Image (cartoon, rainbow, N blue to C red):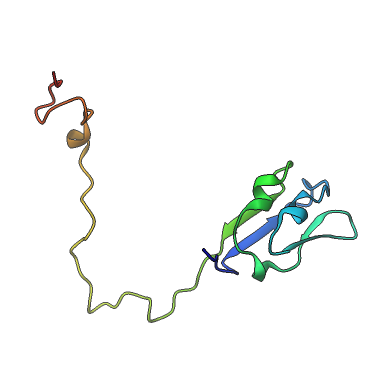
Length: 113
């Protein structure tokens, strides 16, 4: 399965980075590089495939990979004329309906024997 590029924001916290290079070694898209200061830097963010290897392997939690906020185009915006008030998802049960353990109780809330 191919991953889409350029849909994430890669943030490196320089105060936390000790420059071990683990993130650079694990990045399959070569998004990161060690700089002259000995710390990791994002050099090709648009090539990031959002695998999360750098974030998972960083021993100092100095890297964050987060989804970028996408801009919605006019074609993606719901039109005011075609608003549909019906929902295709199942309704969320009220707290009174959600009480009990379905596998251990019958419809009356009594324990199954």
